[in-house]
Image (tube, rainbow, N blue to C red; front, side, top):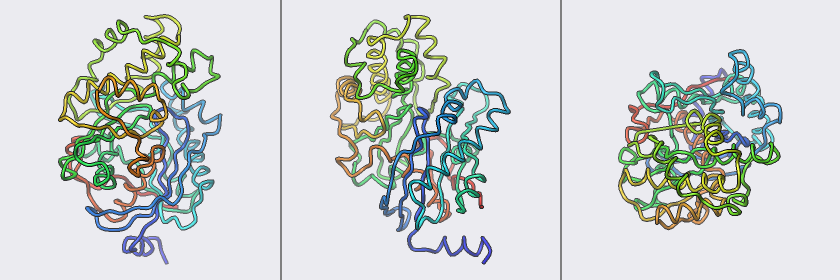
Length: 377
């Protein structure tokens, strides 16, 4: 049987099992979720079969973290290295019963609204993944959305609506606290759903902690460093007054081009070497960026939190105080805090195999289209 005959059989299967893969802007590991999907688009059902976070190899992670300074040759090599690490993570999680892979890859550049030409680059070569895993791989989701006139990110609000709208409800917002924070405001239809990036969640604090500990720590575990410091409201106000992104209206997206190494270098130049007080202040800054962004859109009465930052009690407390909204973790509503994004890209892989288009006009501003492209082994 040739590939396309097998693909047609897969398209007609009642249930399809997809392995979703992503590494976020923090580059702290590869999130893997093996998810079974069934049902029509507007009554989509799913079951997470297994999920885990798998560490990058130290060599690959070190190169990923200096991605903005890489040469073209180094970016080309990293594209393959990331794919090999993604393939290893998928195998370690288990590929039994998996029909295809939906891979977001590793973002190393996103236009953040700062360049004349919208573009976004995710590494983790789809062809390498397909050959390594012996499975069809759907990838380059952001590139397709940009081609359709969108921001390219965030894409997860559309899958949030498909998978979680009945669990969360229209009065709540689903907030992902990864390297960058993004929010989903549920509408009665996917077209009426609004989603956008709000600014940093963990990426700035992660970088400060690495500097502060000379690389011994990658992040502020449980907010311990922030808890030992004091928020400097003057510094916080100064930072917010310089931040045009936080108060900009959606659609909007951002990345470490705005809140990465250059941003942190600027902090150190202005305020001196990182201290617990600066970590506390930048933790509050992430919360205030979220609060500021939420003021630009319709009101909500509750925030449902997912992503790594949902494990940081200091960040959660700051969000509650600065937004004045109640906060609950995703698990309380049956949403995986740690696997939400991997599940989302598994879902986008499923939509691709079905040939179902999404309307992302309320999220990225893009036209209706089927996201992703296919690589085969």
